[in-house]
Length: 243
Image (tube, rainbow, N blue to C red; front, side, top):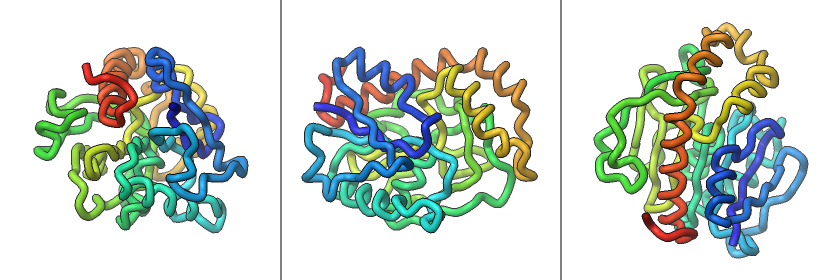
């Protein structure tokens, strides 16, 4: 039994989620798609993996000419999600899940969301197994300029002022989050260096100093929420007992 993490860039990892898996005695296995590691031919060829986490990355879902493996990943995720396999997507991972379910993914019209922004839960989140008992609004860490339409048949779970589609659930065990739940201070510091060009974009109004100051304020609460949601999803996936 393991969780397969689909990775798209070295600097984005499971981070806190890997700590949760270790506490539960569940191995994490990375598949570095950006380094040429190949996806299984089908969900039936997953070996011991019983759930998938789709990580973030700086590329766009629509950049298949630059990153040919995106097409295979979208196909694979579509098969996995529609078969009821547990899938948990973060940032680019959420966009890939949307594309895999036939929804449009595209650059946002306004400023990017880079830093700490509040998200609001939608009425669809009421009673949700992961989010149903959370407060109506809370700050999360964001790093994106693309967005997606909600796939047909999915439940929209969260929104923000800049990007109304922030999270969705499809079926019972597929969850997609535009925002980052897994980050720690080391991740944020590394991204500020690795993706510095993003902050120089005309579409960015991010302040690196403010991001780090806000991280010191918000990270502990974010990490507790992230662990709580991830453990609940692992229970839905059948990997741990429900608490």
